[in-house]
Image (cartoon, rainbow, N blue to C red; front, side, top):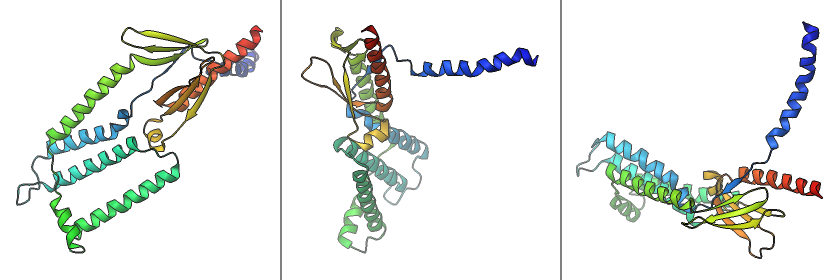
Length: 252
């Protein structure tokens, strides 16, 4: 029995070695989609759902003398804080981790000052009065409506990208656009691709970045912003283009 099993054991490493290159087989086509910056608002969308659910189940617990809920005020401040951070992400670019660290440092200082003056209004009476006058309140319906509005925009984006996207094949680059599915073709051989990550925040949120395609005989580069999971896309494109270059040399 051991002698019969010996060939199988000897062949096992060969099977493993033969199966290993299969992982690097290039894909038949790769789709590239440039999304609007709206997709980076998903933290605010999640926050509106969570806070709205909390407000719906908490009811009117903890009312003060004026009929206001302290929990509702805190929830509103948290929501506004998340929304503010999200708007900063889609408005400004943070190309380096140093700028990201500086932003968090400044944000922590401002948040610390806000909390300090909120609980110590007598330290600077003028600032304390201003903060006491700021009492934002919102009910569950507000948060759910906000989330519903974002859902409508997300659905519109999903529909829009169906009429404007790029497809990379081993021998050509295709641009699908328009309601009538218009198609423009570019030669894929000698296609050069550059990857840029211009915003650390956006990369952390959705692993997104910018792809720049340089097609042969084209004077203008094709710039695709906010491509999701850009590292995985780049790896697939590199594998495809590398296999294409090898096949061209073999044909020669």
